[in-house]
Length: 116
Picture 1: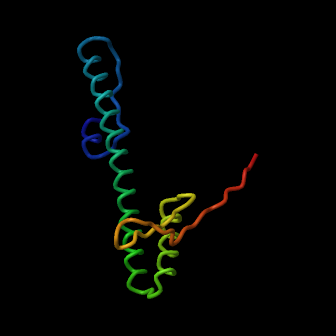
Picture 2: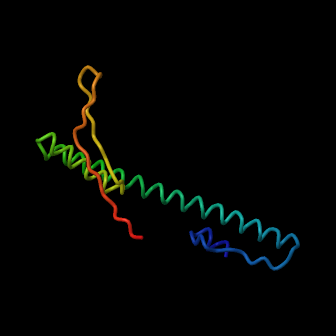
Picture 3: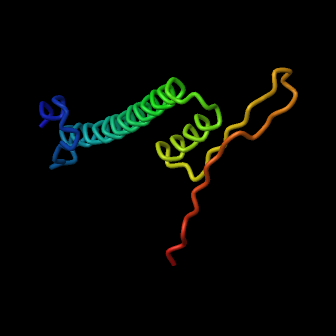
């Protein structure tokens, strides 16, 4: 059981058959196993999220190099952000060279229908 856990079978747990030192050790192992399993799942979720972010950044970079029209490129970028990150809206603003004013340049909003 512990060797299977060490090999990555995060669902392995010890059977607590007594309340003596062996039972206490088994219970402690189960608590540790639960903590490690939870941490491992959390790390997997973070890796998945980072992978999705990198994929989106690559798609945006590809758009920058293949689309010459700035407005079209910004619109496609907003669309990618909404789709890849499951946002309900994304907006892109550009700041003037003096850093005093911002202007809305592109955006995408998704309308959700109520199902009740």
